Image 1 (spheres, rainbow, N blue to C red):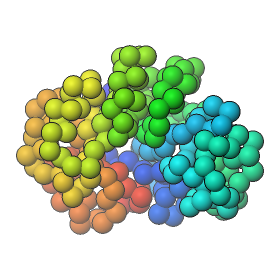
Image 2: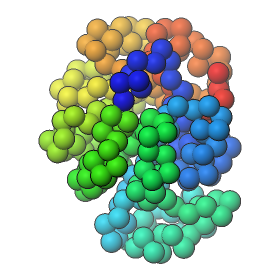
Image 3: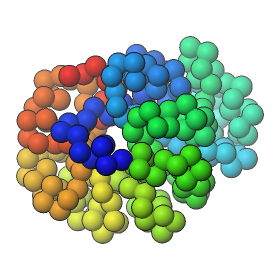
Length: 227
């Protein structure tokens, strides 16, 4: 992932090309790469039978034709659902099989209990240098560091205040805030401490250019063709 951190400015595809395709699907990830994206971001939860699946919400209601909680459904039942345009909810392993080695991967852990299998799969596919594991949850980030300190981690936060200190205390290499709270001072503080700094979710080209102008390293966007 050294190349990831050495880029001057990155457009990170939020759940793939989610403005154009069903979010967190293989179709959305392919579209993002076709549009020139170098990094895709996606969310990970676990099914009832402890399989890692790529979906943002606790429930399947918003993003599929089904209803109910992800953690209360087996992988077989989750695979039966239409996630949009005939797509299925992918497993983390399917994402690695299809995109590992072809782009950077930002893996957001949404819940506890996903860390160990995530690390095992990263190692299985030899993707230690191609991924960043991120989360709002500090407990998830601590566990990832304990399991394998060579895997880069990132703290996601809404507000900018104190986020650099928190990220450093967790051993993170990345910090990401809501774009409304990103400032030149925060970028300078992050860079001064060796952190890669980005923000979410930016879908306005003028806003993206303004953020690039204050020295941010990347933006997370639903539109890989943003700039």
